[in-house]
Image (cartoon, rainbow, N blue to C red; front, side, top):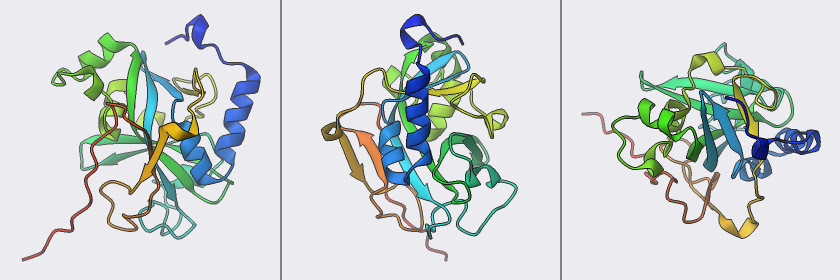
Length: 213
């Protein structure tokens, strides 16, 4: 999908986004709100994210126990896509952040489809409301057509999956922080960030461990 003239991004703006992603995890997570992700003929404005600090002792991170073939891209450099398969049916996409070797990343949890709406609807025919097309990390990937082929993609380049800065900067007062969704470890850590009042933000569900009988 070619960017429209209104979506062109200057080299300076891309450099600023690269610097943000290479910096501390939580500012990078907040700074991803409002950014645009382009893939598969669809553009999504990111409205909800979740931060994970792999080598920093975060038990909910896929990199908590060290490097594996699955999570290798998380160890850097920043700006690449970490895509993983979950529950045997869903893809999820993360943006790698921080210093190379630290394995920090930000899960893209939800977004608003701002271009390619017809294509997103074709991919999600059971979804009745447009605000639900990319509401949740699996739906977001489905709407964008993201799968294992996007693993390791450099998102600030000109590849098939591209991350671009916000059209308008998000004011700090528009960002809300709260606990992460559905994780078994450090579930009360307030590392989920979202745009206050945005209807595309996913519903919060605290993880409840299953009781073995």
